Amino acid sequence: MPDRSYTIPDPAGGEVAVIVRCDRRLKKSARWVRQPDGSILLRVPPRTSHAEIARMLEHIATRVGRLRHRAAVRSDAELQARAERINRECFGGAIRWTAIRWVSNMQHRLGSCTNGGPTDGHIRISERIKDWPQWVVDYVIAHELAHRVHPDHSPAFWAYLSAAYPLTERARGFISGVGFAQGQPLDEDE
Image: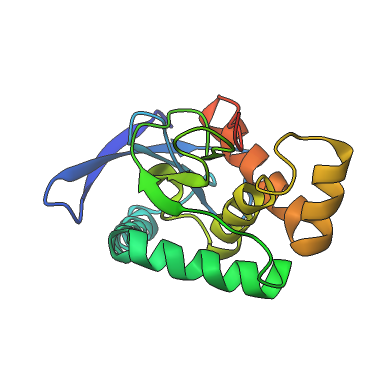
């Protein structure tokens, strides 16, 4: 079966292209992933009916809408509150920073933290991850907070972060998987 093209409504008012591809490796369930160009690739098992594909497209549209809504409500104030909670729960309230905010200009990094200079203590988190699972976003925040104690990626940094945030390895695996699916490595920071 050749690829088929569909469109679903985008919560922003436009449309999102969906490419449906038959994948003989799939036996029972379908898989979908957002492509770097913003379209969605939906892989389906052979013999998937048109009615099943229509239901899947409705489900994807609903899911994309929920993800967009959740991303829209994540503000800088909410990010600050999350960082304060993570600092309390993971670092015993020991970390100090000046500001934390979402930024739109990070193409490859997920976050950055400045140590020293006029912007000392400024933490920036990429808007690209706003719709990721909360525990992964929390990991990126914890990662940047840990840089206030260990500015590099030394063994001491990783030991400190792993002890403070128990889902570190799981989150790093998620990030690697997203990078692989998008065909580009994602840097947690510089």
